[in-house]
Amino acid sequence: MAENCLAKKIAIDIFVINSENFDLMTFSPLATVTGGNIKYYNYEDPEGKQNYEKLHYDLGRVLTQALYYDVSCNSRCSKELEILNSYGIFNSIKGCTFNLSACDADFSYSFTYKMKEKVSSNKRLYFQIVTMFTDSFGEQFLRVFNYSVLTIRDYCKYLKLK
Picture 1: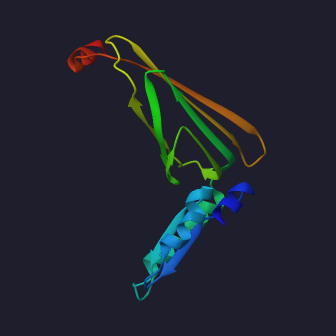
Picture 2: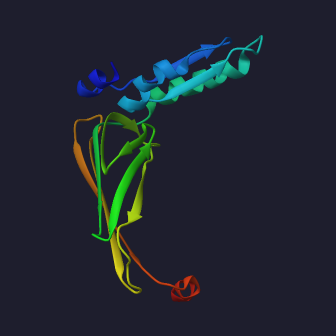
Picture 3: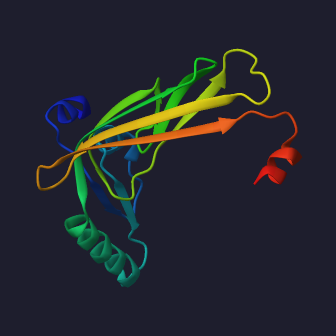
């Protein structure tokens, strides 16, 4: 079901208000795969004031915050490195590319890299992350982040360079 929502570009946010055991693992892929969020509110407070205030705040935030749709992200790096996984609200995905139906402005992600071969000192390693998305007004954006690091053997020398 989550894959169908992703293909149809539907993001699902899940709000759970419960005082008993709840099988969140069954429903969580609906949110994590599509780029939605999961909010849990424990209903053990007899008056429920804290939970209702938090629910009110979270609903207001979901309805008013900026959302981005058709999110696609790709990473690449120098030939001496290999991209292992992508991490985000979707947990872990093997490889360098992921797609989401939607995400909010607070969304973050990361990649893990592995050295494929020994790198000599004073060599630059390059990283590039490309993110494509559409905003609520239908405008498409392309964000490219380029980063390079200098390899060194002595970390103290690196601190002196700065």
